[in-house]
Image (cartoon, rainbow, N blue to C red; front, side, top):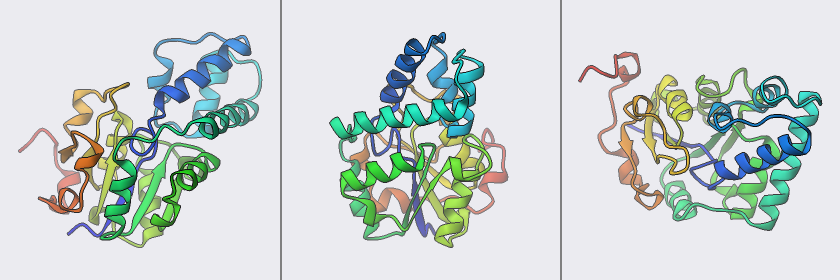
Length: 230
């Protein structure tokens, strides 16, 4: 039985992947680096330490990763204050599920961004725990952030459902042993191989109901099986 739900944030609660892309691309232009079409997809799911190092080493930004990270976060907060791009139905889904399950966030966003989004959306009190991948060893697709969210909820990972949008996020939640409900990101669709790991594919966030979370939960040993074997 599913006993808790863990949400990703970017692409699930807030429609922000293209905002991240725009902010990073503009920073690269401002600071004399070289952006590439593959950069955003490569950085999806990375922790702040990982993507800031990527921007320094792969995109050619001359300033240190810590300074890159701080400036990206500053610009993201500025964008969110001007217009928080909430996903249609996400706030209602969070509030609906909070009446049935304890909830957590397991996000690749920095802590200040997680707090700003949840407070501005008016749903911070719906979550018993929030975890940023900058607070664990590795970002997605490693399962670290999901395992830490389950630990803070005091619920076994196999009794958690995860709500994800990206390929790396789906892989991370699956590797943690959670039931995965995927809402495929329309701007950066997850590859078919990752989407096959999802237990449910949601047509919209309005379809994320307590029944959708609990229905046909997999056996606890599912995460150790070959996903290509029925």
